[in-house]
Length: 188
Image 1 (cartoon, rainbow, N blue to C red):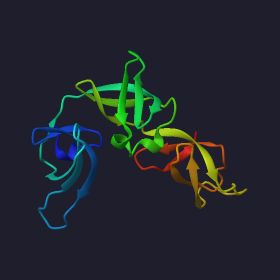
Image 2: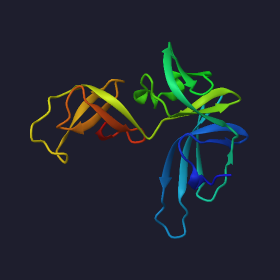
Image 3: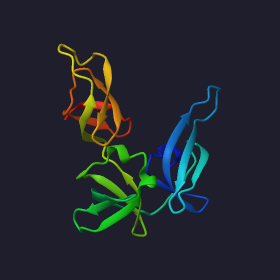
């Protein structure tokens, strides 16, 4: 049973006897003495997709839902559904685009090392790898002599995601992007 302080995005826990996936965590540290840290957590119901906000103290326990986790690869998009395939069993799982909207900017053809969260053999959530490599399709021209610590400029990636990159980066380059923060990490 995880404590509220151990919660991470993508974890599936039970709230009032219903399965919820953790979407966002806001940590509040009150300044008064003796006050405990508060964790404001936004959940999405696994089946109905309803949002729910709850506050917990760091020592509060939550019951983890027994979910199966499998390593999958993105296969293709079919209308509003995204299809993922298990590389070992070749079993395919579909999920609605609205259920993974915060991850859509990082998903591209052939992306693997994605963790699929399955509840009763239904794909309910995905966990992206820590970083993905994406190609820059549009950015202003690079400046000769720009250093790594120089200013940044906006760049549009092959998935439509926009990130800030150093000025020396040019169109067509492949870069690594952190999937948690959405920030440029390095050239790939």
